[in-house]
Image (tube, rainbow, N blue to C red; front, side, top):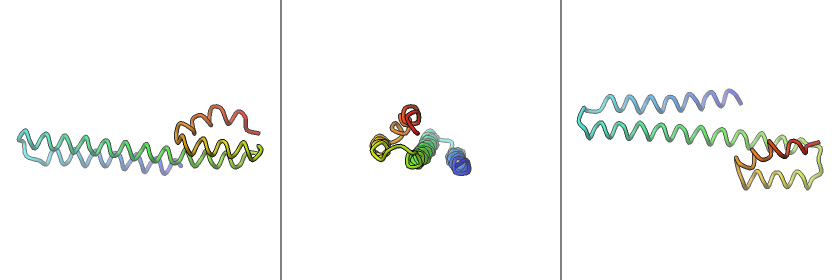
Length: 104
């Protein structure tokens, strides 16, 4: 999991650097500067979104595995899987703080 997060951080950094390189390479007119700034902001946003999606996916997989390994009854497991499925990252956070305390 740490390796995946490391690669996601490297990808985000590369997107930022690519946007900065594009901004420097463009002409010095106001329009070119605005275009370079737009590209830089676009790459930063894409990198942040990719990082958020990756972290959310990893957290979701972790929660599902943790729920399925629990020795609780099946209804408890089904309920938490549905909560995590429909609420996404918020469901995983709720499970982490509430569901893990109920886990046997």
